[in-house]
Structure formats: structure tokens, C-alpha cells
Image (cartoon, rainbow, N blue to C red; front, top):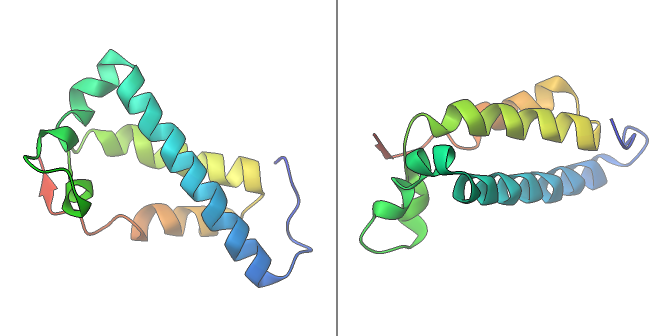
Length: 101
């Protein structure tokens, strides 16, 4: 872990968690575009006719094999969050996907 946030107020921990999570999600998305192997799965997300809010609900199921563990481990290591905090986010925050292939 790079930082020990356990001494910070809960609201500060929550704020840092979401900032870090947003960064990790952005970085993971960049990787999905950058590597041909990952792009083969991620291009399903870009196959929608009109890119908008609902496009985030359309993705290939294989993306989760790469995306979820990377997101969870990165949040745990970088932010010092407990396993349960990071794992809960991986399970709950993206569970309403509508367009899996």
C-alpha cells in the first residue's frame, strides 16, 4: 500500500476512494484501447450506434476478467483500502449492465 488512510476521517476516505477509483477506471479504459488483444473485446462497447450514457451498459463479458481484478487490486494497493471495501465496489458498482455479449 502506498498510503495509509486509516487515520483520516471517514468522509475523506470515501472521497479519496472515489477519486482513486475514477483514475483506475480511466487508466483501465486506456489500456483496453491501447492493446489489440483487449480491444477485440472492448470494441463491443464502441459498436453502439450513438455513444451516450447508455453505451457504458454495453460491453463484452470478457472485459470483466481483466477489468474487475485490476480495479479491485489497484484500489487496495494504491489507497490502502480494505479488501472488503474494494471487493464490494467491484461487485456492486457495475452490476446493472444491460447489453452483455
